[in-house]
Length: 297
Image 1 (tube, rainbow, N blue to C red):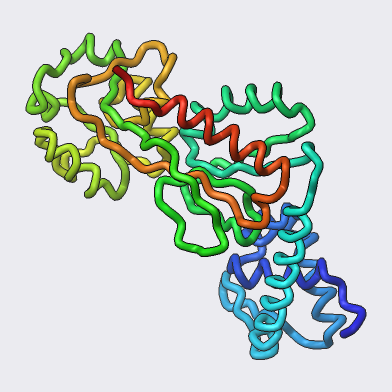
Image 2: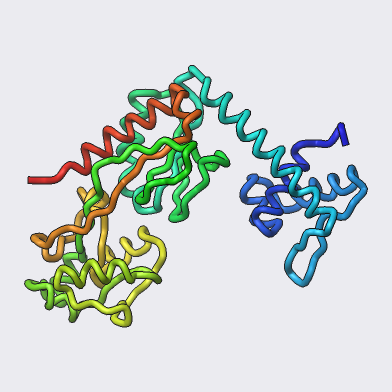
């Protein structure tokens, strides 16, 4: 056991946490056959069976359950060492991983990345476009842009100016169906929403728009896909105002309506925040997001 290969342990732990070989392989950026070979090698090293296949699912054996607890502790210790080492880095170069929702990744980050490239050409920015909250503690990302405040004490969160959300539709769509003048006029137009839109519907109802859940014509969990549906003229929907800037062929609906606001938090791990390259990117992101989200007028 003293000569075990840590890569094999990582493969085992990722499979336990992700629940399947394919998901674990994606997490570790390996091919599935490579991951399978690493787990088989670990089983040979230890002389035990770690997983049993039940139908299409993998289930831990009793021995695998016992080992998983120990490997989690080892993984947590390795993460702490990695965080501490990264946090002490004085180089203003290297990779910085930013995670944010897909529409921000596509519509907001590119111009910010251009500015960062000019300020620190040695930094490589890796964008993780995800609507899920990635675990900064597990180093899935270095910096996160979130719309909820994190609760973990190990994380530093800095609140940016709130995002403003408005209603938008394609010009050609409005030319065809007519432009709503009052909130009640919106009831006749197809709305593009999300699978779970209760809070959004409540916000729109409070602004006089008589929208009900069963009236949503198009639904998608991806903000970026919804934005494309809006731009393609499928109906009207919401979007962050900073993501709409300089978008041709799209108009605001009821522009005088009070915008929906969403808090915006910039988050990093405490130890990573002492890294010069992380700090540089963190501060540049804050400055740019603050500039973009200043109230107009």
